[in-house]
Length: 338
Image 1 (cartoon, rainbow, N blue to C red):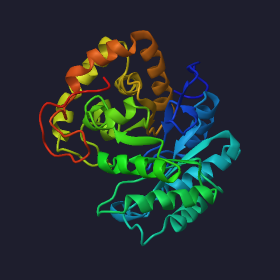
Image 2 (image 1 turned 45 degrees about the horizontal axis):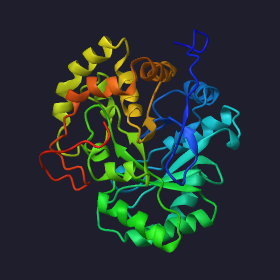
Image 3 (image 1 turned 120 degrees about the vertical axis):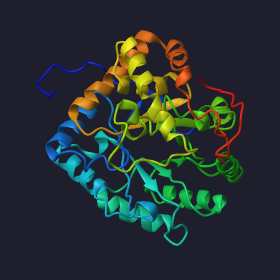
Image 4 (image 1 turned 180 degrees about the vertical axis):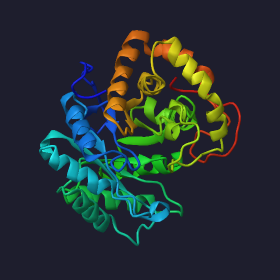
């Protein structure tokens, strides 16, 4: 499909990204190494199209740290793309990354200055404070995030796959000290992985309105859209359930067909059917893939959230993974949302 062919007329709706956030599109475009998986012409066309349909929310990370230290240029390429597309900074939202792998040796201030310089912008709108390998002082993290907000380098922040206890500590400490709390949690969430997002722990925070959900890894690195042996690096296999997810692919394909949808549309619509979901973070590498994703909005309207949740119930493969963020095997996971 090209921009000259018939395009979806869908307008991407908005939802509030948490109690202290803002209205944002339900699509968040980006994820790991998105911008170095397509040509510049494709990228320019893609970002213009995303802005035109009301989805100008871009997740952009500097991945050159810790386990991802690989000389990635995806954030630099994103900045070059936006400038070539002729888009002004006011035309789009940027959600950056703050990693904890070398924190506090690498300060948030140093990391943000370098990250913004690589993109070529003065400030982000949101940041996600990433996961960590070693214990960190969560109270100090909240204080250092506040210092970056005060410095004008971003306005709001979220957390990425934190254990529940750390999320609760960050929320409670921010409230007690009058600081800016995290407003959303970026969690692995898909047709197959649901325990952390739907379980009784994070699910409780979502139900209480203390956080919103940003769904990520929604295609399991492409497995849930038919790429059952991904060649590129993908996210961690939390709970060791990836082979079960691979085995579920034929059922995902068949369910999508029964709903007159593509697997990608089914995966996005399923996440949006959860009322806790503020937006869905996914990566594309072609214009056609983005156009296909727009069809998820029609699918959700046509089928409805309840029917989607019911139809996909048997695809949940990590039920035996503890939903509190510790990822210890357990039994009897109860779903709060979905």
